Image (tube, rainbow, N blue to C red):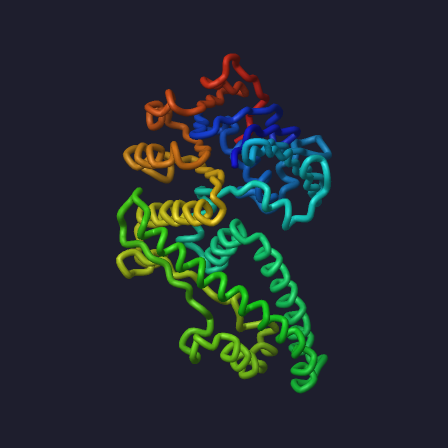
Length: 379
């Protein structure tokens, strides 16, 4: 899988098209020149979401009503797909080969893994970021899992609505138990699937971490169920049903569902210690990078294909030595996009990469016969 090109129309201050190389793509230049915006465009094209903002309408150029990002994906010798995401007000339209597509099918078209400042939440932040990391990795190799997660979220939302009504005194405890019983049945059915998928994926991550050659650190992960310590996890379904029944009063009191995979976590351990708590900033960055490389390895094994890897502001996250080692490791493994403001850290790779310099709205590429001009002055 290769992203052949990306075109931006009224997206932030970008307008134009860049033809990408199949291996390393290095985007460099001073700050506030638009480097990050191109990676953001790739991320939106693949995931329909930005790593910079949750309000996509903010990325529409001032004074315009819509913005579009288009990209051509090469998948195999003769398979080509045209992807497009159009933003308007609070809505977005997604197209594959100019035809509307469901979100689940669209998200299977281009697989992107990312190493950005926002992704550091995986090793520093709350459990939600780590669950999202797991779910994104699983759905990249098992597309039906995305629907399982969506269905589970809907069930939890419906159950929470009833619990909140009970909390406000609209139902007695007995009536609440009857009303939420069918939702609990659905929650349990989907939770069993999610727990199994996440547990298997974590086992795969650990195997990939043991195999990886980039950095021989004792990094492991452990899936931590909210049911841990509550009974026999080998009979997950029975234990989950039992705990949900026992926690009814507490759930009504809180107005929220307190038991299930939406409360689980992923422990990330360096030398047996949880890196979120005990790791230094540098160790946390290294751990995230190793997790990304392990996830890419799992995707390669499952799909016999290569994803896209996006690394934003690489010199802010890694020192010069590790940047060189990383690029050497990646250059023949997967299509990679990196941004940097320090040319000296990456110029040793210019002869074997596609290089794009952004300076005051001009994009110069050393891999094309002619210079490409793109209006690009965004941060």
